[in-house]
Length: 331
Ligand code: TYM
Image 1: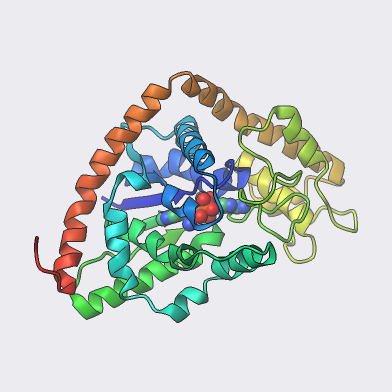
Image 2 (image 1 turned 30 degrees about the vertical axis):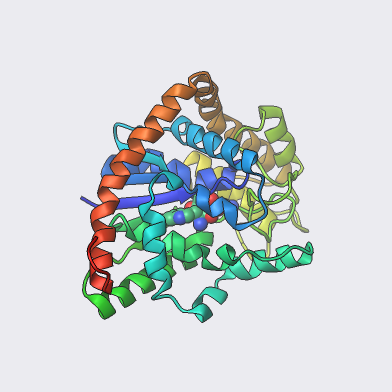
């Protein structure tokens, strides 16, 4: 059976980008057709300036939202990264096959390091090595497929490269994984700046729809989205990034084709209105379920504990095999 792994980082409140680019597919497709693991990757949240209490809160919230979005612990394994030590054990071995140069070429590292430096802060070493830990997250489960949005594709490529390199040097150990992407909305853009990604770690902004935004807040944000000069509704990421973003969001909500959808609109106003209502309806059941789950925190904790137990069992033999292959004495 195909093994699927993916993760989400508790660095901020989860967004519509996270949902359309990743979470929705995990719940609607991946958990039903594959042996799937989904993870709140809390260690990754420590790579930038962080408040410990906030990371704890966001980790719980992310796990609750994953369940609310439809992940079923009977069908998949849901857990928190720091509960399974095997990720960090493997990460060190992979640091021994990764090269400094390839880490510095990672786009997200360059962007985030520049942002930290711009704020006068220092760049944590873990920000540089973060994609190696991400590779360990993936490789430790013998993962075949990694369902992610477009922004994570370069990191999955690195995981592939490290798997191939390790296998060549030390004998076949790892499955070489591949990224899978949604057909539409693989890169949801910020509503106020449609040339940059809708990212949860950005400052609270009117351009970001959060999964827990009230319906009226969602409507307001979408109605105020920046559109483009010109008034015709066309799907063209380069020339019309604002309108294209709205078409992609609406198409993703309705399971439609964004190109075809563009023909149905003659004004930006109508497109915004329909997109706003579609997003409100998309989020409604998730928000309702989230509310119910918040009243039962013990259930969420139980799911995470059981998930970590299962994940550990799957991960340990792989790390043991990698330790032996690379030349470490059995304990
Ligand atoms: P993170 O937490 O930034 O995002 C979680 C998932 O949401 C997708 N995503 C988006 N998709 C479309 N449009 C957007 N605006 C948007 N924003 C986020 C991301 O592509 C991702 O699939 N490094 C990862 C977490 C991670 C991971 C892993 C993922 C750690 N280890 C192993 C897969 C496998 C991250 O920061 O995702």
